[in-house]
Image (cartoon, rainbow, N blue to C red; front, side):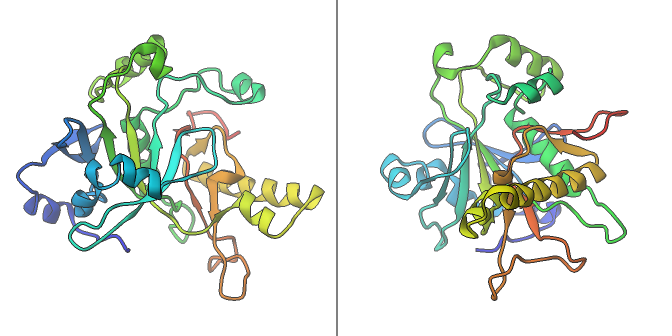
Length: 282
């Protein structure tokens, strides 16, 4: 279903009594403690769907097991649908944040980005909001992305060996962003709106592209998105074809923008970062 757009003032005027406004890294959230004792931080995009995003409406074990679909990638990420609430269901992406974990990236990337780390949940959404606000070119185009809906921290406390996190990495994050409270023992689950379409790799599979033609299509697609990101001062350190969602028109052709370029959406932000001053995009 489409996302409602309301002004911040309208959202504040209609704020339910159990939701408390908080500003974390420059992003307004609406925080509540959930019925299971967890913490839910709704963004302005998620607030109109507060009921659907309560964990009992998507994370209840039997429901989640029956409706989830594992998505491509090295992270724990699913597509699912919420239970109906107020007569509405919502398709969402559920991804477990990997802050503090070692990067499972190739040696070349590690050599090029020695200080690379997974974004913390609040850091990720703050960077994504900055990217969504950025505009490029004469047409003032923005980089299309998923809508960030919420961050959910379940109440369960993990043992350090279960979390897979390094204390040194969490300490560095807390030193950098003390207002973005992190508990090394808690999980953080990011909830995003689902975007219809196929990723670039799936498109290549569907079109049965092979060999050099396949490699050229994937390289040109990711290169194009990387270049547009660089125009607004951002990069994704592990840019992959699976991070780029494409769509087809009624004739089965890839949809294009008015300027003739591919219509796309960027859908992975774990390693999204501003390009440091004086550097060029990789």
